[in-house]
Image 1 (cartoon, one colour):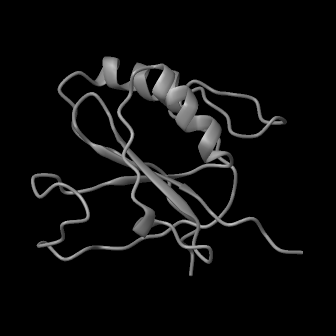
Image 2 (image 1 turned 30 degrees about the horizontal axis):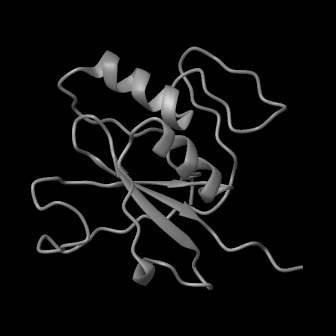
Image 3 (image 1 turned 135 degrees about the vertical axis):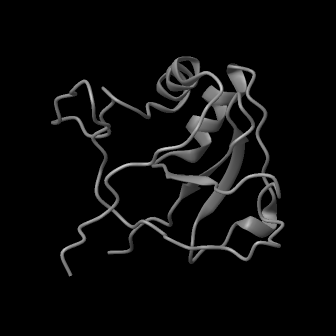
Length: 129
């Protein structure tokens, strides 16, 4: 198959510039951001670290995220506890539920961006080795 991965995520926003700034400030996500030390930022791309990506359509009746939203962003993170401390210090509401966590799958938390879009934060389990 010639598909190598996700090339971008495009969505509508009431205030794209403000939303871009919020994602960069609080999550280091967006154009000019890098996830690895040896990467050089560029003005158009967010340079991410390779790893698993879940692509999963949900039933229209799901209650896993808001019924008035068509999508939910899931971000893979390396240190969920530290990120949650930073987000909390910035006054961002955090939702956690014990039933979301599974030692075989990882730990989860949820926040919302300023326009109400759900963002699931996922820390996969540490690789055994």
